[in-house]
Image (cartoon, rainbow, N blue to C red; front, side, top):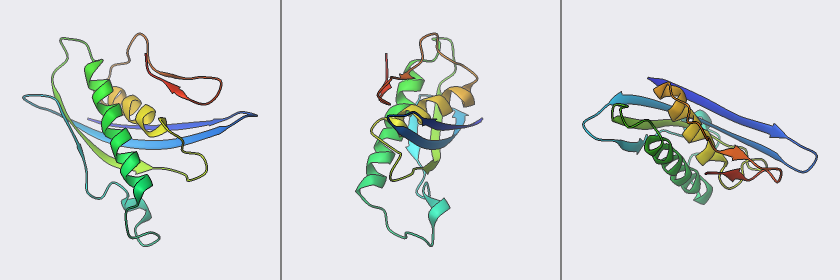
Length: 128
C-alpha cells in the first residue's frame, strides 16, 4: 500500500506546504519507520541533514502514529515506512508534516476517520 499527501494552501494570512509519502505493509504489530533516504529528492543540492530535517522526521513519525491509532479497531496492523518528505523553508510550519503524514497513512490504508484533523484559520493543524 502506498499513500502520498500534499498539503498546499494559500490565504491572505499564510501559506502552507508539506508532502509525505508512505508505504504500508501488514505487520504483527503497528510500527513506524523513517527511511534513511527520506530527503533523497534533494540529494546533490543539500547533502547533510539539519535541525529542520530532524523536526520533519519527528513530525512524520508523530503523524503516522496518530493515523494508526485512529484506524478502525478491526483494521489490520500496519508497518508504515515514511519514504519521502518534501518541505519548503518559507511555507512548512509546525504541524504541517505531521498533518500530511497522517493523511498519507489514511490514503494508504484506504480509511478516513470521521473527525479528521483540519487546518484552522491561522494555518495551524488541529488534531482532535
